[in-house]
Length: 431
Image 1 (cartoon, helix red, strand yellow):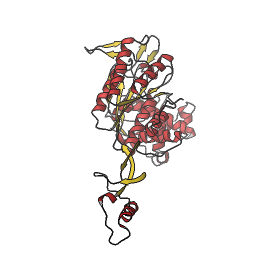
Image 2 (cartoon, one colour):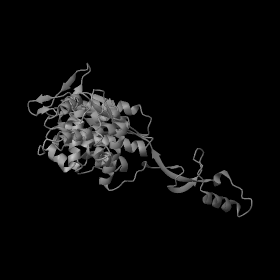
Image 3 (cartoon, rainbow, N blue to C red):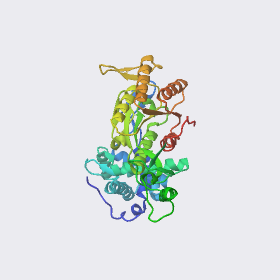
Image 4 (tube, one colour):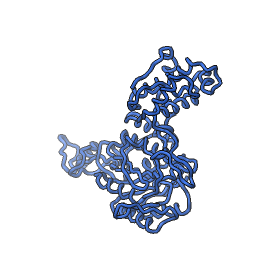
């Protein structure tokens, strides 16, 4: 990949920019819910999938908007971008060079990877298409895709987690507490008599007191097996989680992108588990017409599509994944905004019905919920809509699975998921 650097610009504004703050401003763009499969027309909903969110040109345009909104550009640059300047060719080249260098820094520092597609001049700095070199660079940038690296995903996950915990008013982490006690290094309760297999974390004062009470104060003091007392610590369990994400058409309709906040939650959970709960696991399953497990590395580019909602197959796949995990706790966190409207038939065909709650689709969905409960898998559902029939469906799922139902919005989704994961509260949360 060829980069063009303008030495007149180097060492100026570029060095003063906070790259991490700029990346955080790009979160909405980098985790855009998008629309899989390109432009799609629906007779009721109109066109979807017309936005370009994966090309280098789109990235530069997003960078330019972030720089303008953050006030990082000089007044003369802003006037030129608005078409109010004197048509300064050199200034347009400087803006293009800044965007080029910013992308180069993101690649060099490991946040992004860029496909090989030729030259990479900063075309986005020329909004009216003036300047031959800049026009050629824009055409080249439209054929080059970029991807978030593992470092980039982890950075976004950390920022999302920090923001979510800050919104909750607490930032302390811990392991998954249970009502049980065990022996360990950290004392959490009164000591008890040592039993074979316990961690030999002796409560020395209690042990000596028992020996003295039996033998009297004498030297040497004879210790017996039954004198040994050990500290108790809270028993900490490991947990396997599948985040089940709805990618049906409705997740980006009605003027609201409901999928991008779900992706932020997934990245935040991933960072939390990796840094604070290393014994836990997190897997991601998407469900539209069909269900599919996706690696976290693909999460940023996951998109919704012209799909129905195959809840039954999503639960079935999540259950199979969790049964393969040798963890003491297994749970499904399901994020959805619609009723189940599709099932997979025995011959592999997809049966769909969007015109209400289809009895057969519901029956199959409830059967999968019951199978999860039989396998000891907890299902907590986060519903992004409040239609009465959806409320009844979610409450039935929660009753069968003995899980919880959260009726939330895109603004509070992350807080609800984190509170459920960290605090393990009982009962139903209300927004």
